[in-house]
Image (cartoon, rainbow, N blue to C red):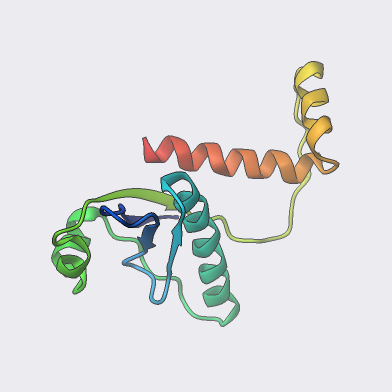
Length: 137
């Protein structure tokens, strides 16, 4: 599932980038710059939706930008007199991992081993980040 994140870019004299998810109540964060804000958005989205799932509640249905502009009551407050950007962020539910066989160049695997002792976690996180990055383009 992909949810729209609205990024409020800093004005003169401000340094942080604010982020809000219009489809998810109480789901907002910020970052020192756009890259940091995007990383924080991924983290808070997954934490918040995992909390909703654990509480046994249904996940909010994602809307597109047109629906959010028309239906989200805070749209004008967030976008008036502000520069903003938006991106879609994927929600990857936590769950039981499955085993897969992956074929990879030995040199690439050696580079991965230099930075982590958990190949599976590293490759899972890299895949999530690349999928979110490609969606944002």
